[in-house]
Length: 153
Image (cartoon, rainbow, N blue to C red; front, side):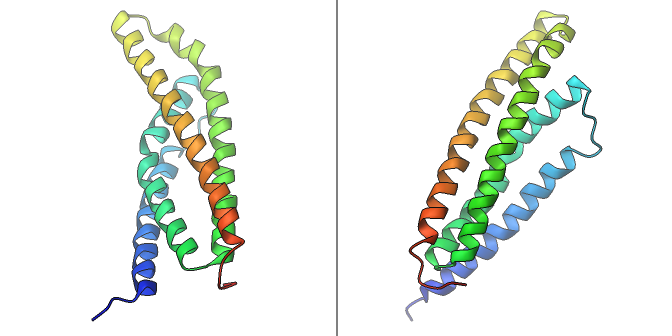
């Protein structure tokens, strides 16, 4: 029995959707309750958000691959817009993070805490840059791919 390619992409899309929902819901819980204005909360929340992005990103990428392979033009375009919104949110989070660094650094009153803050800043910078490039690239791929689809659905 030869497997049906459409069935494979449907299963992949379903798996990706489940992973994306779990990953993004987990990230959303980090932000509740909102405490903007508290530099330590912002610093910690943005760091944790960047640390938690792999699961939601993987799920979104699986859904994107299935949409492109299945010729789902509207889905691909909606995902491209979502990816651009994520890029904008990464820029905003990065700006907030940079503004919080001096405050958090002053609060780090021992060499051990300063070491932890340095590691968090390095990790956040690398993660933010990587996700920024990935989501911008994925938005471009999805938008371009949606122009050559077979099915308008």
